Amino acid sequence: METRKTNESVDGLLRNKIRVVQAKKGYRVSEDAIILTWFTRPDPDEWVLDAGCGCGVISFGLASREPSIRVIGLEIQGAPANRAARGIKLNGLESRVFIVHGDFRQANHFFRKESFGSVVSNPPYYESGRGKINLQEEKALSRHQMMMPPEDLFRVSGALLKSGGGLTFIYPASRLDRIRKAMKETGFRPARVLWIHSHEEAEPGLVCIEAKRDTHQDAKLFQTRLVLYSSPGVRTPAAEAILAGENAPELCERSEVSLVTMSSIAP
Image (tube, rainbow, N blue to C red):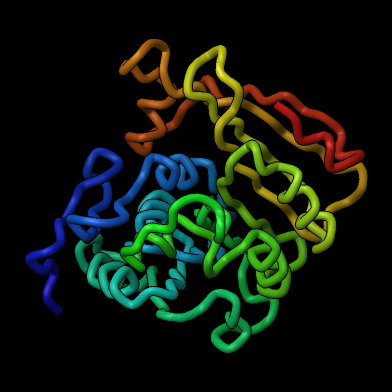
């Protein structure tokens, strides 16, 4: 299989721990995907579904970090799915990462019910009909909720996850009300939250959430925050560590609050 086409690049990420095949123009891997990879913590020996895997960065990052898990990347767009499939060999993950070209909303056609321990997704952020839609289809689908609104993400994940399984995703903090509503309607509860701030005094721009199925009313919610920059252009040590695929011990001290209501999620 050809590794790279003339309109593509092969890029090392996580300090060259993994390599991905990307289009030179259009949507490319963002820091969001790297942060989400760091935040996602599957249990040993789990099957993980990377919903909307793109070029496979999260699939490869998780599989390289967690040697006992196996990952299926599901991608609706043919070109990114093809790049992800070629990236498997680049990373030596032929026996543990598998790419499926298909629509997550129709995942019941591909996978049995309750067949995954974890689902992870870096879903499109922008609502369809709002803002300027990019005319390049691949980039538009990656940025706009044209194929995976959050309600579908929770609904389908709920059917695919085993009891107690977790859905981990990243989303704009400004849209938290919609996430709370979708979780409540589909039987999920938040278990871990990472608030992402551009600098110390800024409001959170993004939030990573791990939501669990079938948790008890008195389960605990762990929250912490990541500040990306200590000054203009200078990343914090925690951000540098995460983007390099390393531990960030300063983020291990987490506040704990009771999961009484969905409004417990607050920066």
